[in-house]
Image 1 (cartoon, rainbow, N blue to C red):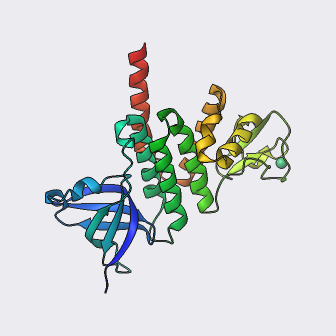
Image 2 (tube, rainbow, N blue to C red):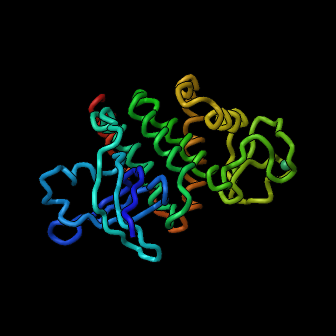
Image 3 (cartoon, rainbow, N blue to C red):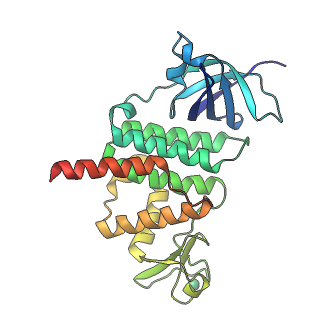
Amino acid sequence: MAIQSSEAIVLNRIPLGDTSLLVTVYARAFGKVKLVARGARRSKRGTASLLQPYQVITVYFNHRTNRELQQLSKVEAGPYFRQIGEDLTKVAYASAVCELVNRLVLGEEPGEALFGLIFRTLEAIDRQSAESCEMLFWRFQIEFADVYGTGPEFTSCLGCGERPEETSVCFSPALGGILCRDCQAQDGEAMRISLGTARLLSRVRELPLENLTRLKPVRTSRREIQRAIRAFYLFQMDDGRELKSLKFLESIEEDSRERRQ
Ligand SMILES: [Zn+2]
Protein backbone atom coordinates (compact mmCIF):
# COMPACT_ATOMS: atom_id res chain seq x y z
CA MET A 1 0.00 0.00 0.00
CA ALA A 2 1.27 3.44 -0.89
CA ILE A 3 2.68 5.81 1.69
CA GLN A 4 0.26 8.63 2.51
CA SER A 5 1.02 12.08 3.76
CA SER A 6 -0.86 14.72 5.71
CA GLU A 7 -0.28 18.01 7.41
CA ALA A 8 -0.55 17.42 11.14
CA ILE A 9 -0.25 19.12 14.52
CA VAL A 10 1.55 17.27 17.32
CA LEU A 11 -0.70 16.83 20.35
CA ASN A 12 1.40 14.67 22.63
CA ARG A 13 4.42 12.41 22.73
CA ILE A 14 5.77 9.80 25.10
CA PRO A 15 9.00 7.79 25.04
CA LEU A 16 8.70 4.28 23.67
CA GLY A 17 11.48 1.82 24.45
CA ASP A 18 15.02 3.20 24.52
CA THR A 19 15.09 5.18 21.31
CA SER A 20 11.57 5.59 19.92
CA LEU A 21 8.60 7.91 20.46
CA LEU A 22 4.86 7.36 20.47
CA VAL A 23 3.49 10.54 18.93
CA THR A 24 -0.18 11.54 18.80
CA VAL A 25 -1.03 14.04 16.06
CA TYR A 26 -4.14 15.70 14.70
CA ALA A 27 -3.82 15.19 10.93
CA ARG A 28 -5.78 17.27 8.42
CA ALA A 29 -6.61 14.20 6.34
CA PHE A 30 -7.22 11.64 9.10
CA GLY A 31 -8.03 13.32 12.43
CA LYS A 32 -6.32 11.92 15.50
CA VAL A 33 -3.60 9.41 14.68
CA LYS A 34 -1.03 7.64 16.88
CA LEU A 35 2.33 7.18 15.21
CA VAL A 36 5.36 5.16 16.22
CA ALA A 37 8.55 7.06 15.38
CA ARG A 38 11.21 4.36 15.46
CA GLY A 39 14.64 5.53 16.57
CA ALA A 40 13.47 9.18 16.67
CA ARG A 41 15.34 9.93 19.89
CA ARG A 42 18.61 8.82 18.26
CA SER A 43 18.02 10.43 14.90
CA LYS A 44 20.63 13.00 13.89
CA ARG A 45 18.17 14.72 11.57
CA GLY A 46 16.38 16.50 14.42
CA THR A 47 13.27 14.35 14.10
CA ALA A 48 12.62 14.41 17.85
CA SER A 49 12.60 18.23 17.97
CA LEU A 50 9.88 18.31 15.29
CA LEU A 51 7.75 15.82 17.17
CA GLN A 52 6.81 18.11 20.06
CA PRO A 53 3.38 19.41 21.05
CA TYR A 54 1.98 22.30 18.96
CA GLN A 55 4.54 21.78 16.15
CA VAL A 56 3.02 21.77 12.67
CA ILE A 57 4.55 19.05 10.50
CA THR A 58 3.89 16.87 7.47
CA VAL A 59 3.79 13.19 8.34
CA TYR A 60 4.33 10.31 5.91
CA PHE A 61 3.08 6.92 6.93
CA ASN A 62 1.66 3.70 5.63
CA HIS A 63 -1.96 4.12 6.72
CA ARG A 64 -3.56 0.89 7.81
CA THR A 65 -7.18 0.97 8.85
CA ASN A 66 -8.17 -0.93 11.99
CA ARG A 67 -4.74 -0.40 13.50
CA GLU A 68 -4.34 1.63 16.63
CA LEU A 69 -0.70 2.49 15.93
CA GLN A 70 0.73 3.57 12.58
CA GLN A 71 4.40 3.51 11.60
CA LEU A 72 5.80 6.96 10.85
CA SER A 73 8.16 6.76 7.90
CA LYS A 74 9.14 10.41 7.42
CA VAL A 75 8.43 13.83 8.92
CA GLU A 76 8.94 17.32 7.51
CA ALA A 77 8.82 20.68 9.28
CA GLY A 78 5.81 22.91 8.59
CA PRO A 79 5.16 26.54 9.60
CA TYR A 80 7.04 27.24 12.81
CA PHE A 81 5.43 29.25 15.64
CA ARG A 82 8.65 30.64 17.03
CA GLN A 83 7.21 33.15 19.47
CA ILE A 84 5.19 30.57 21.38
CA GLY A 85 8.39 28.95 22.67
CA GLU A 86 9.68 32.29 23.96
CA ASP A 87 6.89 32.89 26.46
CA LEU A 88 5.76 30.48 29.19
CA THR A 89 2.17 31.75 29.14
CA LYS A 90 1.97 31.10 25.40
CA VAL A 91 3.51 27.65 25.85
CA ALA A 92 0.90 26.84 28.50
CA TYR A 93 -2.08 27.91 26.34
CA ALA A 94 -0.73 26.24 23.18
CA SER A 95 -0.22 23.07 25.24
CA ALA A 96 -3.74 23.38 26.69
CA VAL A 97 -5.21 23.50 23.15
CA CYS A 98 -3.32 20.29 22.24
CA GLU A 99 -4.16 18.58 25.52
CA LEU A 100 -7.88 19.34 25.19
CA VAL A 101 -8.00 17.94 21.64
CA ASN A 102 -6.06 14.86 22.71
CA ARG A 103 -8.41 14.27 25.63
CA LEU A 104 -11.68 14.76 23.76
CA VAL A 105 -11.07 13.41 20.27
CA LEU A 106 -11.22 9.65 20.42
CA GLY A 107 -9.98 8.47 17.04
CA GLU A 108 -9.79 9.05 13.33
CA GLU A 109 -12.42 11.28 11.73
CA PRO A 110 -12.67 13.81 8.89
CA GLY A 111 -10.33 16.43 10.31
CA GLU A 112 -10.44 19.54 8.10
CA ALA A 113 -12.57 21.79 10.36
CA LEU A 114 -10.81 21.00 13.60
CA PHE A 115 -7.35 21.08 12.01
CA GLY A 116 -8.11 24.60 10.71
CA LEU A 117 -9.35 25.70 14.13
CA ILE A 118 -6.27 24.38 15.99
CA PHE A 119 -3.96 25.93 13.40
CA ARG A 120 -5.64 29.38 13.52
CA THR A 121 -5.59 29.34 17.32
CA LEU A 122 -1.87 28.46 17.53
CA GLU A 123 -1.09 31.09 14.90
CA ALA A 124 -2.98 33.73 16.93
CA ILE A 125 -1.26 32.68 20.19
CA ASP A 126 2.06 33.04 18.37
CA ARG A 127 1.27 36.46 16.90
CA GLN A 128 -0.74 38.15 19.65
CA SER A 129 0.33 39.25 23.13
CA ALA A 130 0.52 36.83 26.06
CA GLU A 131 -2.36 38.79 27.69
CA SER A 132 -4.71 37.89 24.84
CA CYS A 133 -4.04 34.14 25.19
CA GLU A 134 -6.75 33.58 27.76
CA MET A 135 -9.43 35.01 25.46
CA LEU A 136 -8.03 33.10 22.50
CA PHE A 137 -8.38 29.93 24.59
CA TRP A 138 -11.99 30.79 25.53
CA ARG A 139 -12.70 31.28 21.84
CA PHE A 140 -11.00 27.99 20.96
CA GLN A 141 -13.06 26.10 23.52
CA ILE A 142 -16.35 27.54 22.25
CA GLU A 143 -15.48 26.83 18.60
CA PHE A 144 -14.16 23.34 19.42
CA ALA A 145 -17.60 22.45 20.81
CA ASP A 146 -19.21 24.16 17.77
CA VAL A 147 -17.30 21.81 15.42
CA TYR A 148 -19.10 18.88 17.06
CA GLY A 149 -22.48 20.63 17.17
CA THR A 150 -22.41 20.84 20.96
CA GLY A 151 -21.41 24.50 21.25
CA PRO A 152 -23.02 26.29 24.21
CA GLU A 153 -25.91 28.71 23.67
CA PHE A 154 -25.38 32.20 25.11
CA THR A 155 -28.13 34.35 23.54
CA SER A 156 -31.46 32.54 23.93
CA CYS A 157 -32.81 30.56 26.86
CA LEU A 158 -32.54 26.80 26.26
CA GLY A 159 -35.91 26.28 27.92
CA CYS A 160 -38.24 28.75 26.22
CA GLY A 161 -36.12 30.14 23.39
CA GLU A 162 -36.66 33.75 24.52
CA ARG A 163 -33.83 36.26 24.87
CA PRO A 164 -33.57 36.94 28.60
CA GLU A 165 -33.89 40.58 29.67
CA GLU A 166 -33.22 40.24 33.40
CA THR A 167 -29.78 41.31 34.74
CA SER A 168 -28.62 37.76 35.44
CA VAL A 169 -29.23 34.33 33.94
CA CYS A 170 -28.17 30.78 34.76
CA PHE A 171 -25.56 28.89 32.77
CA SER A 172 -26.06 25.14 32.69
CA PRO A 173 -22.83 23.18 31.93
CA ALA A 174 -24.89 20.00 31.58
CA LEU A 175 -27.46 21.40 29.11
CA GLY A 176 -24.85 23.59 27.41
CA GLY A 177 -26.34 27.06 27.58
CA ILE A 178 -28.24 29.72 29.46
CA LEU A 179 -31.63 29.49 31.19
CA CYS A 180 -33.89 32.43 32.03
CA ARG A 181 -35.48 32.91 35.46
CA ASP A 182 -38.65 31.04 34.46
CA CYS A 183 -36.70 28.05 33.16
CA GLN A 184 -33.79 27.88 35.61
CA ALA A 185 -35.41 24.99 37.52
CA GLN A 186 -34.56 22.76 34.52
CA ASP A 187 -31.05 22.44 35.97
CA GLY A 188 -30.64 22.84 39.72
CA GLU A 189 -26.83 22.84 39.30
CA ALA A 190 -26.76 25.72 36.82
CA MET A 191 -24.54 28.65 37.82
CA ARG A 192 -25.60 32.26 37.95
CA ILE A 193 -23.83 34.64 35.56
CA SER A 194 -24.66 38.23 34.66
CA LEU A 195 -26.47 38.89 31.39
CA GLY A 196 -23.45 41.04 30.49
CA THR A 197 -21.19 37.99 30.81
CA ALA A 198 -23.51 35.92 28.60
CA ARG A 199 -23.43 38.68 25.96
CA LEU A 200 -19.65 38.89 26.24
CA LEU A 201 -19.42 35.14 25.58
CA SER A 202 -21.43 35.63 22.35
CA ARG A 203 -18.95 38.31 21.32
CA VAL A 204 -16.00 36.01 22.12
CA ARG A 205 -17.52 33.52 19.65
CA GLU A 206 -18.28 36.04 16.89
CA LEU A 207 -15.46 38.59 16.74
CA PRO A 208 -12.57 38.10 14.31
CA LEU A 209 -9.63 36.60 16.26
CA GLU A 210 -7.49 39.72 15.88
CA ASN A 211 -10.23 41.87 17.47
CA LEU A 212 -10.76 39.76 20.60
CA THR A 213 -8.43 42.00 22.61
CA ARG A 214 -10.93 44.85 22.15
CA LEU A 215 -13.12 43.05 24.69
CA LYS A 216 -12.04 44.17 28.13
CA PRO A 217 -13.90 41.92 30.55
CA VAL A 218 -14.12 43.31 34.07
CA ARG A 219 -12.77 41.01 36.78
CA THR A 220 -16.18 39.56 37.78
CA SER A 221 -17.03 38.77 34.15
CA ARG A 222 -13.63 37.18 33.63
CA ARG A 223 -14.17 34.96 36.66
CA GLU A 224 -17.69 34.02 35.53
CA ILE A 225 -16.43 33.09 32.07
CA GLN A 226 -13.57 31.03 33.51
CA ARG A 227 -15.98 29.16 35.77
CA ALA A 228 -18.61 28.59 33.10
CA ILE A 229 -16.24 27.30 30.41
CA ARG A 230 -14.29 25.17 32.87
CA ALA A 231 -17.51 23.59 34.20
CA PHE A 232 -18.77 23.02 30.64
CA TYR A 233 -15.59 21.13 29.71
CA LEU A 234 -15.33 19.21 32.96
CA PHE A 235 -18.81 18.00 32.09
CA GLN A 236 -17.63 16.92 28.61
CA MET A 237 -14.55 15.16 30.01
CA ASP A 238 -16.44 12.75 32.17
CA ASP A 239 -13.37 11.70 34.19
CA GLY A 240 -13.50 15.12 35.88
CA ARG A 241 -9.74 15.72 35.58
CA GLU A 242 -8.53 19.29 35.00
CA LEU A 243 -6.12 20.04 32.14
CA LYS A 244 -2.47 19.64 33.22
CA SER A 245 -1.39 22.60 31.08
CA LEU A 246 -3.79 24.90 32.93
CA LYS A 247 -2.54 23.76 36.32
CA PHE A 248 0.95 24.61 35.10
CA LEU A 249 -0.35 28.01 34.04
CA GLU A 250 -1.86 28.67 37.45
CA SER A 251 1.46 27.85 39.08
CA ILE A 252 3.41 30.29 36.90
CA GLU A 253 0.78 32.99 37.49
CA GLU A 254 1.12 32.45 41.23
CA ASP A 255 4.89 32.72 40.93
CA SER A 256 4.71 36.05 39.11
CA ARG A 257 2.18 37.40 41.64
CA GLU A 258 4.55 36.48 44.47
CA ARG A 259 7.46 38.13 42.70
CA ARG A 260 5.45 41.35 42.25
CA GLN A 261 4.60 41.52 45.97
ZN1 LIG B 1 -36.64 30.45 29.49
